[in-house]
Length: 113
Image (cartoon, rainbow, N blue to C red; front, side):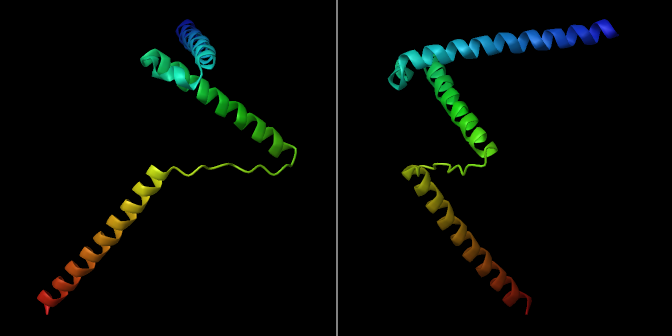
C-alpha cells in the first residue's frame, strides 16, 4: 500500500516537473517571438499566450509584494469596446424579458379573475 502511494506521488511530481519545464520553454519561445509571433500557428499561439500569462503573473507578484508593504495598488482595467457592447445588449435583453414576464403575469391575473 505504501509503495503504491509513494509511486502515485512520485508520478504526480514528475508530471508537474515535466509540465513546468514545457511551460518555461513555451514562455521563452513566446518572449523571443513577441506578440506578432502568435500568428505563426498553434504552437506559436500557445507560446505567445504562455509569455503573456507569464508577464501577468510577474505583475501579480509585484502587486502582492507592494500590498504586503502596505502600498496601494491600482488594478488597471482597460475597457474592451466589444465586451462593453455585449454587456449592453445583454442588459437590453434582460429588460425585455422582464417586460415580457410582467405582461404574462398581468394576463394570467386577468384570466384568473
